[in-house]
Length: 513
Image (cartoon, rainbow, N blue to C red; front, top):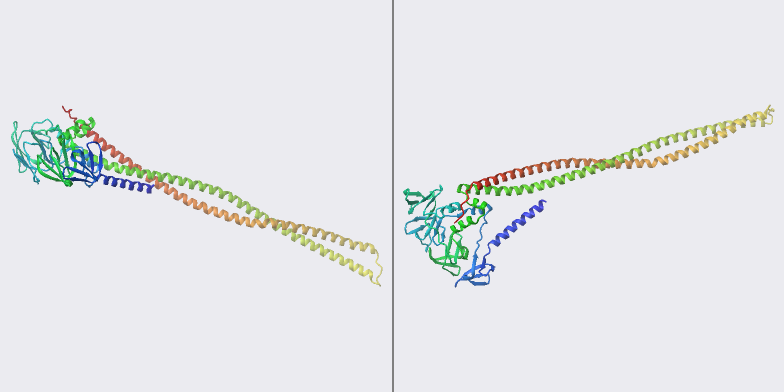
């Protein structure tokens, strides 16, 4: 799983890189609904070239000259939606926003920090001056107001501008008379609402933050020429431009008001957050994004830990089952071994008994042979004595011969019986020895098989103990990851709840008239 996880992450990174590279490509939308991609060149005679295609400027609805840059993170995107104006500058009556800090202002003109040649904004043609980024809520507070100064405290002082000089803003109010404010205290100087043009205009967004609305625009190679207030005979290089639009365009304040007007009620309340709530909301959104990333990683680790736990449990169960099987086999082998050993001992004992029977039969045969030999000798002596020439006649010769012959016959019978017993004993002994001989090999084989089975059981027992340790580790790891996921989920819920509480405290603006 770890390899597949890394492969997935690499795929995601490649996708993001490809998406980022694609976002750098120039894009052109024509008035008849076509979209062209490719490197854009601005040419003389108000001609725009996309790749190999050339078309007149009046056929362009939108042109995006995206520059390679670091993509904003999600927190930055979330923060952007709360701002009406994202940097200090001035808004002309005709809707052009000049993204440059105002350093001075009198009843004639507005002076900017580092103003380029050809930039001139007269005071009568100025709608507002912004001393810092302006939130949607602050922009909404300017709507429908008489001229005056919006302060960071949230107060709005109606009055006439006397001038801006040396970092001070001088105002004159009917109620408060003349007052002076540090520029650091001010958010925006409100003079008059910008004028909405009924006819189509060009809107140029620059990478410095300016948003220029103009009726008069012409092209030269790599340059946009501006000759309409507040830019006179001003050359804007192509690499300074992000987008050019043509049609029904509006100024940044009107766009901000429309954004709030068109938002659903819940979203409208969120967009109208105060500066304090805005800062906390952005902070919470950053925390929420960080928590969600950590939570996603923790869930991946938890899934891996749970998978490892399941595999460990399955391995432990498998080893335990195999160990039980080996134990059953060993018990069967043990019974066979002891049965074989018992049979061997029994037959060995019987063989010894039969050997003893053979020895007794041999002794009995020898005794019979000696008795026969002795009785035969006696008969021979008797026959020899009566056969001598000068021997005296024996009384009862026949009776004596019969007396000597009877023991010989008896000895012969004993010898025959002993011979038969010996043969029977030898046959029985050979039979038992024949039965006992293979039992020795069987006992040895059975003993070796039993020893082998015991070693396998010992190995399985060791593997089982190791599997238990692995299962305990995987269980602890799964518990740790579940606890981490639970903690992060609780933290996410807490942050989300605080965001909802902030949203519920934000006053919903009345519908615009």
